Length: 302
Image (tube, rainbow, N blue to C red; front, top):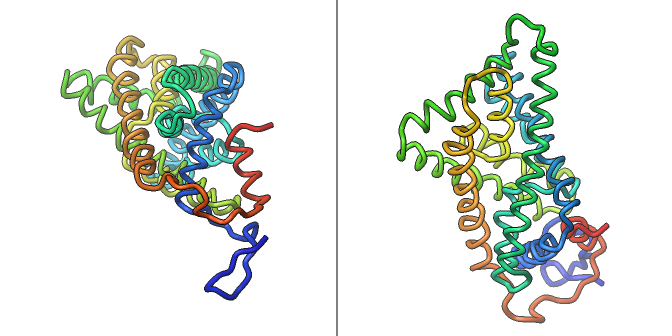
């Protein structure tokens, strides 16, 4: 079946590399509803992959920044991990902070199911980050035999100390508030990347669309809970001296809450409130195999 462009040129829907805003939001609602039914095992496995690949991507960004003296170049390369999460249909808790509330507001699932998804994906992301942290610690320290840490390991230790103690714990309540605000901004950008990737049906389009917002959040130094899971587990393992209780209270707690607000309010609520389809039959019924495959992947169909 075809549509017409400018009233006279036939255009096959399967040839269009663009998802309309209301189609996008309806697809996000459906995706959130399906994600709420995914088994705990799959949430953990897919979450594990996402945490692990973001840990490796973070290490790459730091390494490139140190080797070239251009931290921005590291930020430009960092989104490769995020792009693979989008393309492989894995689970990232920060993206789910936007998707699941949308399906809950639409009546596709309950808040209990939303919190269940967030909890298990958060745990899966953490386990992935922890695994990479352990492996890299063994590598950096030559299994505990190295006399000094390599530059990238020393940088991770410095970031761990700064982003838990110096920037936040030392400021008390103000530090918690600042961490929360930076987390709001971070996940606003990350969920923008998720949403922009869904707008395109092509692999190059998806990669380019999600790359720019992720580069922005990384360059600006905002707080993303999954990236922090890697940094603030690796730092203590490398001997930073930062207590994990401090990591949990001064970083993981406010950053998780800020990421929830950033994704749920500034992407989920904003898009839901203005682009959700409220009237049936507005759009023509078009058989679009490419869109069907895309939605099947996003909905977790296997």
